[in-house]
Image 1: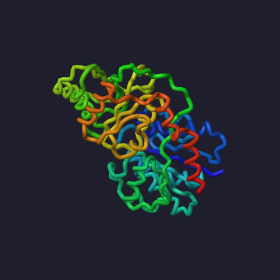
Image 2: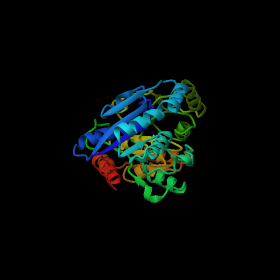
Image 3: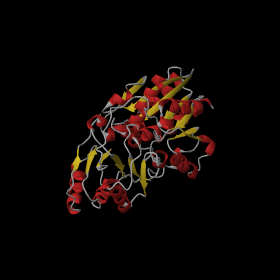
Image 4: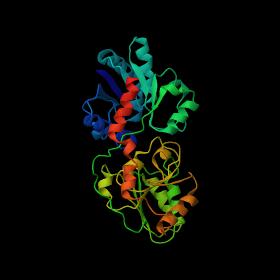
Length: 357
């Protein structure tokens, strides 16, 4: 049986990467006939560690302090990696972090190990400015979207090293139903909230300022005081009187949402936005900026609408057409079915094919 180590750095427990790894663990549990032995190794620990619960794991806790964390990555982590390669003798090390996967490749080569190293990045390589040093001599790349594959090719990575695996979504469980209002006018946003950074929530507010009629928008996600003040000032400046509510972060956000007609995402860039899949798997229609990368893999006529990033006027027009019912949402069944390609069985099959080749 081949041994695979999934190596990750400190993760808070709130992000999309944690959701992916949690779902991956659930998928492996459901696929008990796997021909691989899996081990999750976490260098640094986690503030909210429940995302690791499904895994056979080793956790090396460093510190929540970023400065101390970075010092540990330089001084301690290299020795831990060497120890793991020597003691575990893995066939594969798959890592989400450029520093970890580069160290893993250097050490496996120096130790004459048979270990192959795979880079499994959950962000845009270009938007995060990953140096080409971290791309050289790596044995393989798991691309979480077609856009990520295109980025890697443009950065000089050979096509035969890149394998699109997407991300795993639980399409089997019957999620608690989130009802529609019947009026196509109750919108939600789910995710970290910033002003005009990656998540670009100010674009959502600007678009809503152009929307007529009766509507509401609920935002679920972590937000700092300064950002909330800036967005509330923008709401006032735009003279929006319809209800826009900030609900903060929730570990079980879908249990908090009782009614929703559509989820809106205004990101400037993504890797593979899990929140879109999570919403669609519950039958919620999607409205999203067609940003790099991953969005066009998920959103289609079967489940929602795309608009050009930055064009808040077009976003506002789409929302107006939805409220006036000039545009009608796909059925709940059609939206759920559009996520089947990302189900657990299909995901494990893609991963296994890659590791067996």
